[in-house]
Length: 530
Image 1 (cartoon, helix red, strand yellow):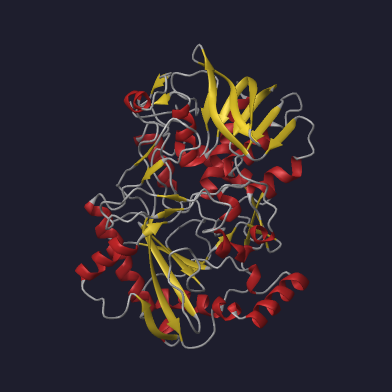
Image 2 (cartoon, helix red, strand yellow):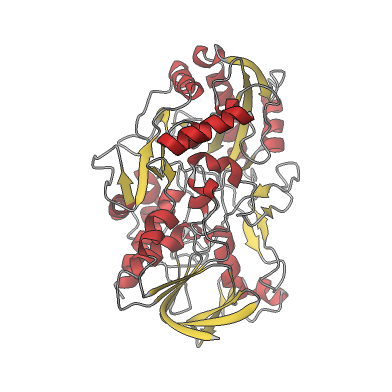
């Protein structure tokens, strides 16, 4: 069975939903959006606190890394969404977008002309629908709802005070004039509900006659003839389909999925493709290379009193919280769990923060992080914002059904380990301040007996994990390892672009959802200008 369109978007995640909205706004353009996962129907997706149910759930691909050589050879769970809306449907909804220097580096040092902060800021503003801030740094009318927590948990407020006692100033807006400081995160929520790109961008335009959205579609390859992308082959409900694109195919399958789709289509490192018997269409060594991610390290504390979200783990409290949310759209269910945070320095010589902290008003929230068996707890996570370590995504076979080999190569560079341990030390110093100590019963993980720098190094290697920010595997630029040019066109193949976190030439110093939205906002203009 075959069908014809102008644009085919491969991947209905954060980026794909943005593009589906913008490209289909042209009534003369026929747009097909293909998503491997299911629709975003489960109610937990739309409750902000539902993040706690998502990191180990059925709406992910279930990836694990290859053994991490510098992290005790662990195969670390590597959560990637498999649902309409992608990461924006299962993440912690934290809204940050980095500093101007990140984007100026792309433009001035990494061959990405047109991606300086002055170039991308209009797209951030266009996407953002902030309910509180209306300064030059914020948009108020965009599809992506952004709001502030109505009533952070008491333990979150204590954390923000402890940061100030440590010496980190209060910052009410991490996306404003300055990033450094501590405060309560704004979240991608609207009216106490998650505002994923499936909700903010896709759902309002699903009625368009020129837009077709298909879920449960595993893309097997991009059809390329005479070095031009002609369409997409995919499997849905066991049947093979072919869709043709008169204008362009745009791959938005994420930092793990996009290189996989390209390699299955014969675009990637020639030797690797030949090893798996895949005919080489374009020898691009950068496909699947340059993988980087934020390596997060958690510490968990037990609290004296039930002032965190853990108090709602009991059935009667859970029922009360559910009723409060149902009736008033308030209470603990409206919390994104990762309520507080900070941006600070491991080295005072840095011009911008190089560490980020996430404070979770609960323990055992994410897969692999210890919980408190009785009573309440809290978690503080830290990571190095611009890691130097680079890894790869590679095929394990020529079949689309076979899982990819994900190797973030965490802590391969000594500088990453040094800064990560600095972040771990600062985390413990924050938790030792009076603002937190009056609530803390004991250090739960690690125990207080872990003290020396060598012990902290061992802890970092043994317990660190992904922070769900993979990027760079189809990087943008002009050097030999670049996969796409600054207009996001795949080198050597006409009619094919990539638009998602995989095109980042280097990791920005913040969470990556907002930047992914920005990239596809800009991509829609680049595509429409053709």
